[in-house]
Amino acid sequence: MSIFDGLMGNASQHNNLTVEKKLEDVLITGETVSLAFKLVRDLIVFTDFRLILVDKQGMTGKKVEYKSIPYRSISRFSVETSGHFDLDAELKIWISSAELPAETIQFRKDKNIVAVQKALALALSK
Image (tube, rainbow, N blue to C red; front, side, top):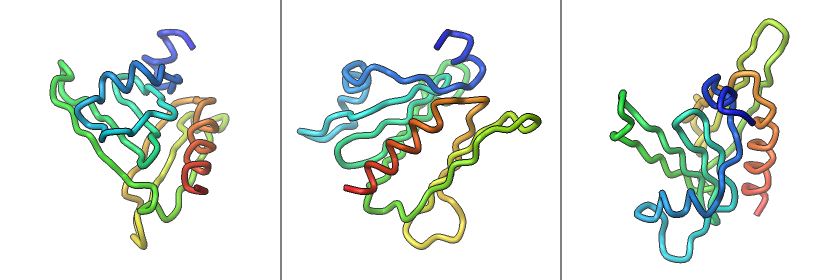
């Protein structure tokens, strides 16, 4: 994927070792990154134990929110792909028995949403 894909909100697969170095203060001992996707400035990270959503905030991106969702807490998820007129694809994640999704992640004309949902399905099947 090109730099323009990232700027347009398309997720691109990111190097696992690079992400592990960025998240060394967040990861627990022995935890490794299985798969990571970069979405503009944010990251969707699959580890051995959990899903980590990294949300860089503000103009400089110095303020960062790390959302950690253990796989055992995810009860279901849905993926809505983009269409001809609706160019946004969307991933929704529900926690435990919550009625509303805990997380909604927007993608724009993104082919990698299929890879993200496959990784999430694989992680939840373990």
